[in-house]
Image 1 (tube, rainbow, N blue to C red):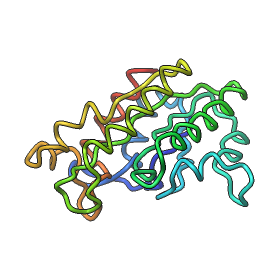
Image 2: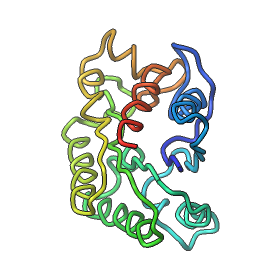
Image 3: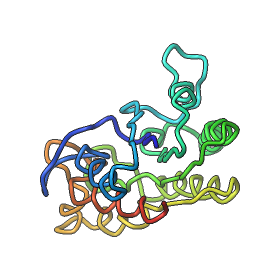
Length: 195
């Protein structure tokens, strides 16, 4: 199984960590008594345009195809907002998904984690985020993929700052988009509820 989400592979305690950190990966693997191998193939900070390229010297898609996992869990969006048009974004996601499906690799689509526009880090509006998340939903529906809505699940925490936002989505030393250990654990539970 590959996770193309965050390059972070930190261990964590209840209040630290980030992305799909080592603690979350350990939790996921132990849920299946070691019968799951998780390979984090993420290219930190990369947009879906980079994932879909097969001609660059380092190609995420070629690398994943060479690994030939049973399942790819992908959550594009955060690094594509707002610089990629929605039509180009959709085409790029479809390119990746179709290549994986052609290799008989199952794909699970995630929405991106929500960004709190009040945080001041990147100031991506809720309306802009909604547009990108809608593309993820549309591609999942059109291509018959399971869809896991982190945006929907965590949105109420992100869009109203306070204890709940801090409890799940604020990773000390990180920024607006990396969940802490509790957020990672909740995300892992959502993913494994589909497997």
